[in-house]
Length: 276
Image (cartoon, rainbow, N blue to C red; front, side):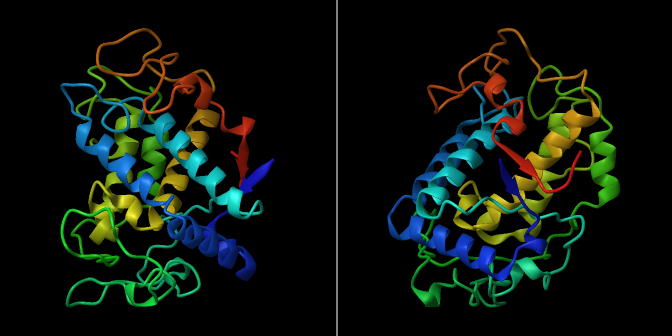
């Protein structure tokens, strides 16, 4: 069974293999489809209409399926590659190891927020931003410039303590909802706050333009797995047909073969490097 590791424990070879596989997907023209798909769903998902990838119970299984598809794409290039995760409760500074030139590259420069170091720097010619909202065709970051800092482990613990997966009205206003507090529309705000902290491309609907997207969402996925281990008697809600949202046995767009039930147990496909 594949093991997803903390990026802080990756060997030099594992880092190199991951970066090379991501760059090759980009060169082959297969990477940008993930950017487009994410943007279509984040802009189309609304509190009062159909919602699948965001603002909804299926936020977590949808992104788990998204990660699995991307990971399989990477493994078609190098079978040894698995997605690493970024534990932002520990690696919290702009000079943390993941921002080094051997993995994701560093912060954007002050003038235009362009990333100038690492394999994804525009000057290297291998990471043009082609799915974009404006003319800026380079990767941008503004690490730590938001007023809200990264979530702490205490923040995470407070969300993991919420015992109900989700609640009506199954959107960004759902109170007492583990999913909604993890997604970041309520409570201490975990997932959304990290997107804003990274800034630049990560603060847009086209956030997979920044490869840190995958490490961030891998950690969100890990937290869902940890919540399930802590609350074994609780599960995905809603379980029955509900207007505008995906119930436990419903198909999740854009896939024809995936339901939240299919995504409920990560151990059918992979494990994380720390037990829950």
